[in-house]
Image 1: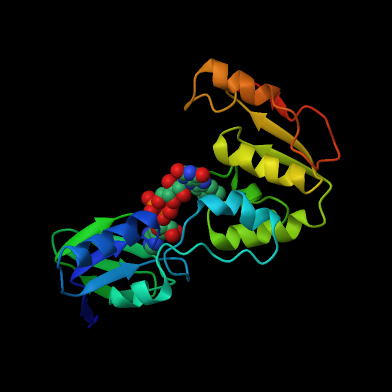
Image 2 (image 1 turned 90 degrees about the vertical axis):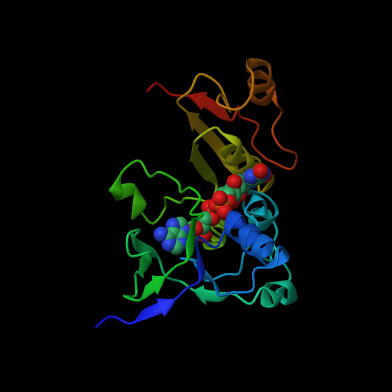
Length: 216
Ligand SMILES: Cc1cc2nc3c(=O)[nH]c(=O)nc-3n(C[C@H](O)[C@H](O)[C@H](O)COP(=O)(O)OP(=O)(O)OC[C@H]3O[C@@H](n4cnc5c(N)ncnc54)[C@H](O)[C@@H]3O)c2cc1C
């Protein structure tokens, strides 16, 4: 018979939302069991540096959401690195990828988003990268150290930040964006146009225009 573990309040996802939810619960006085299921091995951390300093500068440390002491004081029960694979809302149970089952009083799903690969072949291609996690960032940085050219699919903020970081590392970058303009979903045309007109990042060797539009 499968052992059922009492998870108390269970949070799926060890990202920023999961981290702040855990901290807020403790700050507000919740003293019961607080479980976090995370498919990453790290404590809560911030992702914004992944496309900036952590990509460009060697030895950039993981940008922790809370210090080690603060994290310890939250008294969390971590389940990591494992995935939540099934939720039974009637039984109030979560199944983990390692076969364990957690019973929950309350459940928070804080699983964030993930990059879409254009095909499964791309997902397993050794020279195609996605950037979501700290480990993704470390792999990408390693590859960029010896790269001369880079194609970026997606002219949104993360794509453009990676482009700027890569240009500063002396890499020739082309950005492919299927919308008519950069960051179309988040800014007006005047800002997109200003982004497209921006001069190449300082320190880059190549001064080619970095944005190309491609048809759907
Ligand atoms: C490279 C990069 C740069 C960014 N820069 C900025 C910026 O400059 N400014 C800004 O405002 N925002 C930025 N963002 C966006 C910001 O980081 C996100 O909005 C934020 O991380 C969302 O937090 P979250 O907790 O909702 O999700 P996430 O941070 O995605 O955390 C979700 C976690 O849940 C885990 N998970 C998912 N499914 C399961 C499962 N079934 N079982 C267990 N674990 C699971 C995921 O692996 C992840 O660890 C950036 C993001 C990236 C990737």
